[in-house]
Amino acid sequence: MITSDNALLYSYAIWLIGRHDFGLTVDELRPVIGRWFFMAHTTGRYSNSPDSQMEFDLGRIGNLPPGDGRAFTAELDRIIAANFTGDYWDISLPNRLDTSSSRSPVLFAYQAALNILGAEMLFGNQRIRDLLDPSVQPAKAVDRDNLFHRKVLAGMGITDRRQVNAIGNMAYVTWPADEPSNTDAPHDYWPRITDAMDPVVLERQVRWHALPIGWQQLDYFTFLERRRQLIAKVVRKAFETLTGERPAYVPTTPADMIAAGESQGTEFKASARWNVHTQQADKSLRHNIVKAVCGFLNGEGGNLFIGVADDGTVLGIENDLTTLESQASVDGYELFVRQLLDNSLSTPTATTVRVRFPEISGNVVCQISVAAAGKPVFAKPAKGGNGATDFWVRVGNATKQLHGDDLLRYQEEHWG
Image 1 (cartoon, rainbow, N blue to C red):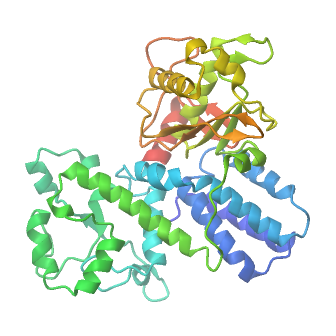
Image 2 (image 1 turned 120 degrees about the vertical axis):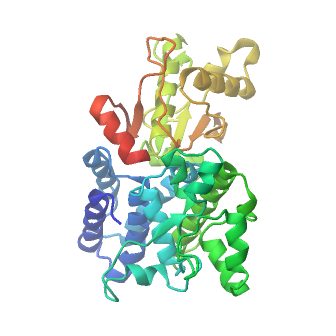
Image 3 (image 1 turned 60 degrees about the vertical axis):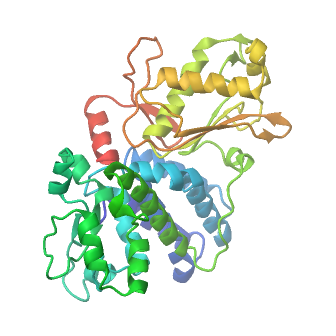
């Protein structure tokens, strides 16, 4: 169930730092490291350029007062919250679930969630955690099976293996003895099986296994979309149980993000249209925005702040606005951002990018919140051209371009 050895080893290194340098007890460390590992493994934090990411994390910890255990746990939770944002749960995670990979980190996050919540197999009474527990019996892979059988889908004209075996169509299921291999359509077998089940048991299994209301009657692709959203809610619920007695997370404000500096999920650009050095309009700056957004889309999402210097000084977008002339307003600026991204990236961004204009220290900045994409996104080169061919990804506090084998390897590890 571990798809990233680095996530395990680096989380253990952070555990040791908490014990040795900050004097925390095992009981104090267990919940925060549990949350940290859940985040690092689910998001693939240490999958690409792990040394650079770990160096960044160690830098954040190294700046804390020595021996201040409370500051240590607060800093880890701050980084966790910056990665597990509302947009991550609502958009990025459902998008990442749009795969058929049986080794996807987000699939294992869902399996871990069912383990944490004490869920039973669908139609069965065995808990998933018991099937995985090597102290009870030799641990084995938990059976997953199609909710819409491949023969049913073939009758709909759906034969592509990725669509047939999509995560959204697979469930941890124990078929009743008289239905060992169900090839019927869901609207036929579902009432036949569930009519004999305890309604209370059925209700919680439907919730744990993320089955939409009336799912057996839904169009297949509508079903997949809705179930991915519900799976993400189950994963979120399980993660939130790891907070123990701690208060619920308070959403991180734009000012908090800027104060924390650039990171895996945060990037600053002084401007998008006005060159602060030459003091004139500069069209070449627009590619920096495209590159940054492309990097977040291909990574784990994040926030790009326009109107903020590299050192976190809030400059505002007033100079950018003056270059818009008759459209010199935040509405005009959002239109500019939307058109720039839609013209420069290989996929539309309406559902993955949100544009806001918070006021910080008396200055209005542009905050572009980007959710992780469900498939690779390419950008047009800086020199122009009709084709979107450049692949950018956010790694640590930098945006890097990948080519050739590195690009193919990243796509396989990230999307399956």
